[in-house]
Structures are given as structure tokens and as C-alpha cells.
Image (cartoon, rainbow, N blue to C red):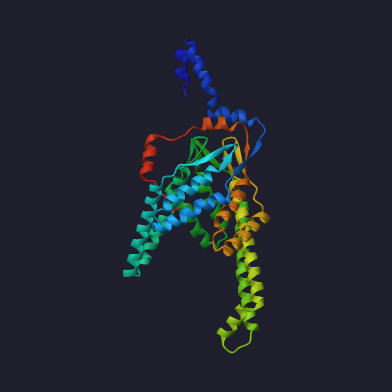
Length: 384
């Protein structure tokens, strides 16, 4: 972009003045200022994948991964993500995934090697596990940071890559500092811990050179964490109380006999079904509240993301997918994945102000050659 001092000396040359004028509309401030005055239009994400198509990818990936003792799993992940990204579109333009299998395999080999060292050391010196705990606590934030950076840098839309600017200090604070503080307060600060972790993952993202703004309030996270914790605690306590009552109602002198009779009684089947439904209900509530609170707080330039997940459809998908997977011995898994992904993605909408093409041109790529080369050298993906 030419500054004021550069424009002055070339004022008498009309051709150059015209060239400067033409370049003005792609500046980010101009796009944002013009878009702010326009009414927002709601643009939904579309997901066109099908269970049948994904099943063919899934079964080949599974067979080849088994045949190669897991080596092909890196190529399997790239095939899967390219299929899902290529079937996800916003305003008629699909997303792209640029991950390379060798980079993913490299990260997994490093993770496997680190686990091998840990396992060997603890087998020879069992107390060595205590010494590895600080390394584990300090290493997990680094893994999360590198994985997130890899994931976003391998994603593009309209030819522009996403990026991640979160640093290790921020990851350490979000995934070690806040969990310790939450535990110290008996998890009264659990909602704030979740908010900090989501802010780190989403608030440090960018689209080209345009940073994502995380504006979600903390209140919904506190409420969701406390309600979800209470629900899961009630389910566990209720299951224990119901099973204890069933055992006490059985006849027999030996405790093992009463436990076996309780587990095979008709009442146990009813209690198990109730527990199954209650557990998925609590999980659906937690996922709905977490995803809605997280994505509703994202802004990019003049545009804002909205999430409209509802409890009933999500609960129905969880229950029916689980039953179908069990009844088909796992073969329904590709259809289950597509169903859940489709509902979650199509519950997202972009409240767009202005044209997305113009905004994308203004956002630019935001990638320099040095940063790209350093990123390539440290490309790691641990499947997080």
C-alpha cells in the first residue's frame, strides 16, 4: 500500500494516480467501513457429504491402516479431512485442507517415541513416573499449541489460509494454570477455566492477516459448567444408589450371588436404559451449551458467527447413532460421523455485512516466506 509521502511526488502522472485509485477498494478499513453500514445477511454453512461415500473412504482407510500396522493412518487422516473439508461450503465456496501425510506421520512417530521412552523408563524404574509428571504437564500445552497451529495453517477458504498466533505461554496458562486454580477452588472456577481454554483456541486464530475476535461472555460458561457437573454427578450417584438397592433386594447369603442376580434382573435392564438416556441427555446439554457459547462469540472483520445447536436434535443423534453402531458392530460409524457433522456444521451461520469476496481480498494471505519455512520444519500433528 502506498503511503502519503509516496503519492506526493507522482501526483502529475495521471496513469499512476489512476492505479492508486483502483487499489483502494481492497484495503481492509475500506471494506469494514462500507460493510458496517450494510444490513447483515445470514449465510449458513452447507455440508454435502454422504454416509455411503464416506463409508468407502473409511473402510479402505481402516483396512490399509491395519495392514500397515498404523503407518497408513497419516494418509487416512488426510483423505478423511480432504473429503470433509471439500464437502463443507460457505456462500458456495468450499474449504480446502492442505495437510501432508508425511508431516502428520512425523508428529505421530515423535509421540510414539516419547511414549516408548516413558514406558521403558517406568518398567525399569517405576518411581520414574513421578519424574515424568512435570514433563507431561509442561509438554501437553506445547502439543496443543503445535497441533492447533498445524490444523489451522492447513485450512483455507477462498484461497486464503487460516493461521494461529497463540504462544506457549498462553497455552501453559490455559491448560495448566487455570486447571490448577479450578482444582484449588473445588472447581468453582471451572467455567472460567473453560472460557480461558476456548479463548486460547479460537481467539488466537486468524484468516489471512485478519485476526479473529473472541467476544463471548463468561456467564454462559460458568452456568454450563456448573449445571453439567451437577447433572453428571446426579447420574453417577443415582446409578450407584439404584444398583445398591437392587443388590439389597436380592436373596442369597453371598454378596457375589446377590450382585449377579441384581445385574441379570429385569429391573436392572430398566435402570440401565434410564442411565443410558440420562447420560446422553447430559452430554447433549453440555455440547450444545459449550459450542453455542464458544462460536456465538466469534467475530472476523465486519462478520459474526452464530451457532444454533438445539438440545432435542443433538440428543436424538447421539442416542440413535450409538444404538446403530452397536447393532451393526461398528459398521454404521461413517454414517454416524456424517450425521453429527452435518447437524453441527449446518447449525452455524455467518451474519455477514458486505461481500465475502471483497473481505477475503482485503484480508490477504498474511504469510511470509521465513515463517512458512520455519512452520514447515516444525509441522507436527498428534491427532488432537
